[in-house]
Image (cartoon, rainbow, N blue to C red; front, side, top):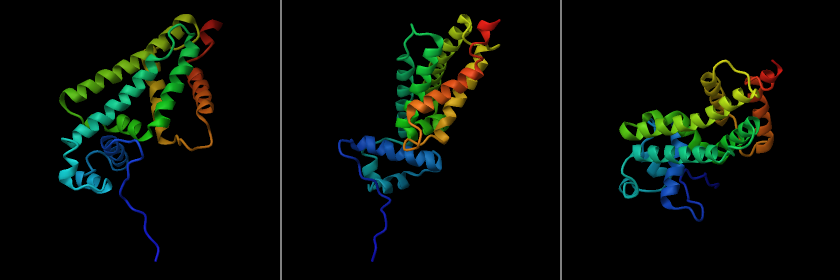
Length: 206
């Protein structure tokens, strides 16, 4: 008689129990949504009793907050690592590469960050808004520098920034870390696409 795959999760070697709880919670939040995911289901996936789960965490919202914070940390660290002395085009390419690298490496966490953060409340929600705005400001600075240098040609820097970020964020819907295109090829494709949308080179032709 064959065996059926288990729905329980085993932590990879070197992974802490809390990291494993966050990983599985991220998978469930992405698949079912934050509100539709029960703590009972999470405990079952982790092969824990309910009381044992609460020895590691205080609440479901605490899990969401930490998942979202980890994603925000990764995105902000990537954006702030873009060299300020490079050309606007090179800075944009570095920003795109970093954004896609975060999604590729933490796709569950990134998906929860994009779609479930609104379920946070109070100071935790405000903290996410502030960090989201800080990340957006990093991209806006690149777009504004490109407009000033003539590398980009857009009428509204704020709108161009939001459209660019929306395009990048949506990649989590189809990006497969095991897919046929390596990160560098995806970066080149996205950069070319975004540069076209930003009117790259048109400003210099005026």
